[in-house]
Image 1 (cartoon, one colour):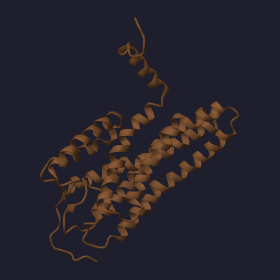
Image 2 (image 1 turned 90 degrees about the vertical axis):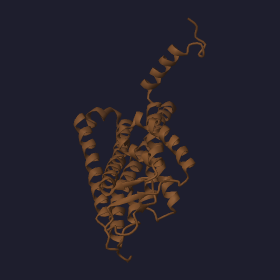
Image 3 (image 1 turned 30 degrees about the horizontal axis):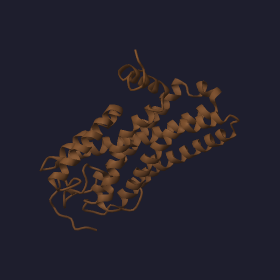
Image 4 (image 1 turned 120 degrees about the vertical axis):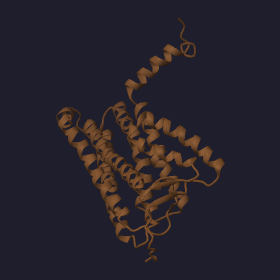
Length: 285
């Protein structure tokens, strides 16, 4: 057990991704571009935008209250997304394996219940994780080796044993990460069996194509989240890079992966391209 100082921490110092001013400016430009793309397709992650301020500011302090709010809302959006990805896999399972019964199974009422359940589970898990992270005494160093308030980075600063909190967060990870992954694997297992049994090759390819974009997001998002919250502690720099990936890169890819595979979106893009760039397409008026 660590030696406890009597002075209670009231604010934390974010060390950021780099100490070099030039590197910080480059990171600012890079992350600014990433966030601009992200916000166009996924407004739920707007709570992360204030963390960009720390890339330029010399004093990167954040109050204990703001750190709590940032951690809580980040977890709520992330955990809810975990549940929604499992719901999306179930939707694809019903659409491909039981297409004739899809309207009667996926009714408006069922969709509302699934969405409500996803948000409820995300909020409950987030509250538990936040509570077990910030209930600990923080009386020593206040330097967070990260660019935003995240549970693993905060637990390192606790001035007491963190085993109970780490176990609670691990168990919540089982609930919001491993259980949804299991449901996704079961859903896609049935989808693969159904697709293989299809007599039409076109039908099989269409089924796999429909699920491809979802699987890409599942692998990227769950993989990075599991590395952060459910694996042994790695180097601080590696943790930062993984956090950047699932907090910024994955949300940025969402509108691209999902939208560009939608026929309606493709149709609109073709019309716009034909209208504004007719010469390049070999179209003459």
